Image 1: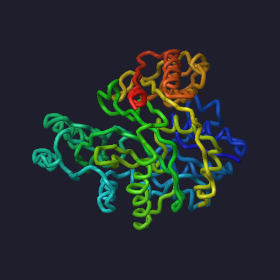
Image 2: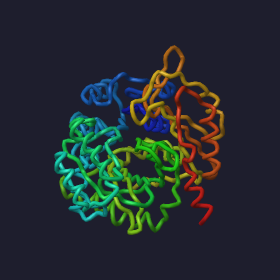
Image 3: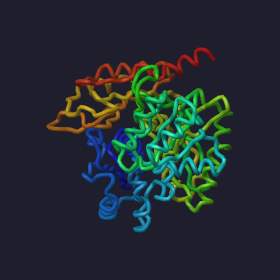
Image 4: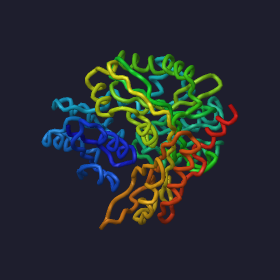
Length: 429
């Protein structure tokens, strides 16, 4: 069987890596790929947003399964294009993907379905945003979110009036996020612990994937601006069986029922960003694809055939498969470029990859890399996801950091505290 993985980041490296392990998969294509994906399959130079060209390629080479990594092609309707041609693709339709494509749609959907989330207002101008902030109805800090896709950077947490004004300037005047900030969501800031919750669904049946926890802030101790994710751990002890059941009942079931009721049946993976508050779990955001870097810790723990699992979703036979999870823990530490999450410095030579791969249980997932004359160089902000699978969380964290220390490129930075809060929690409980 031939598979095509769309995308070129760490999530896509993890997806291709796991699909390659299936005895049913004979060939893996990746578009547009990266230096790490070169070793797993055939890299195809098609941008992930070129949905017609991507469908042409899948049709011409007789791809048996296409798996979409990033959100942009889903919101552009790549699943719809493949369906029209009778091609098999894993991912929701354009209508269903609006859960991620528009934060305004998502918040209004949450409100209409009675799903717990932060209080919010939608504004379309600097003046209206200022009026809401000055009213104090959402309190401080104030969360400012661009409506559309912004590569994980369209969220600003304003601590006070001065920071809110700067955020409004970025959104409405400087147009740093382009048309994504034509509308802006202002939210009450939730307090608690942030966790990631992934659910696979064929539109009817569903089941949750293993628990994981993401680290969004760039600096240690959860300081500095938000990023696309500086690391992850799995499992997360904060998600007890009782809490997971509550999430399924109060959030997942009404989400899938509500989407079906709106004529937008959801099929694929639904990744829900949650804040575990004193009042219970509340939705921060929806994502219509596997998380990044959550996928880098989930797939190493999956004890089963990913190809078989994704096909069961497409065929509406999810209830007939029963995936299991390794009892081991996984930790991913992201190595980022100088300047990230702002403008990253690129073109830096990466050394030590072979040495890192020798650390027990470590897999280095490439995200923003390219190969030039057998030399691997950086091409973006989040460069590598250094992942360790070990018998327990402290060992996984130690091995991941050991591997990170074996790798070097000028200006590299990473968080050394990934997983430390979870380890502290386990020691106290």
